[in-house]
Image (cartoon, rainbow, N blue to C red; front, side, top):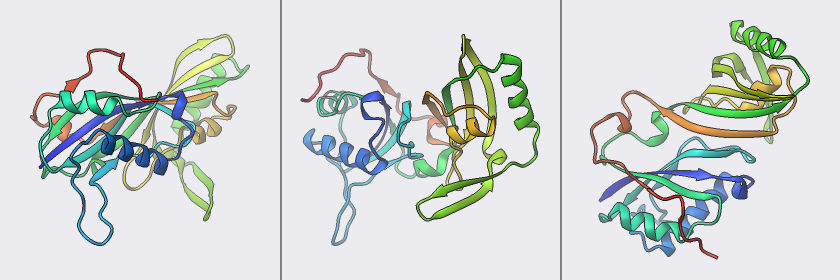
Length: 236
């Protein structure tokens, strides 16, 4: 048995597919690449793979994480070369790491997510900064999010770790956000932007997921294998 952690991108070409469709996309690619996935037992076996912190539709990312359990060992080179050929434009493998089989699940390790958010507004930098400081100074920020199952009420302030202005060009601002993202709750970038009184973002990009200090990535493991070239063959 072998456990691999894959770091991959989700670009503009695939930002509107759902989390379930993304899981199916990966399953097809892995099957076509003949990766020896381990399957569960029972009447409806399913492959042992998990994606951390589902990305909202319309959001791009350069640091998505997926854990896979294989029934026999494969080399990182084989995995990278064979699987990459089966992936569509917009999905690119950035790194592969082998982990211990007994380590905690990926989802249980995720603590925060970092985002870059592009917003257009005529407000001056001092006004945007004042809105940020006002939000961060609040102890609680009651919020309501409408879902298919009805409204969900929660404290948005508890999900915000950091907000900062990263860049500004004319009326376009790039904000950096660090939001709580764990098994209990996940902050959404567009809701934080709304709480600041700013227009809906032009773009939301997840930079990376931050894991707990006791995570597998902080323990001595086999060296991570990363792609040295940004070019790779694409399936048609």
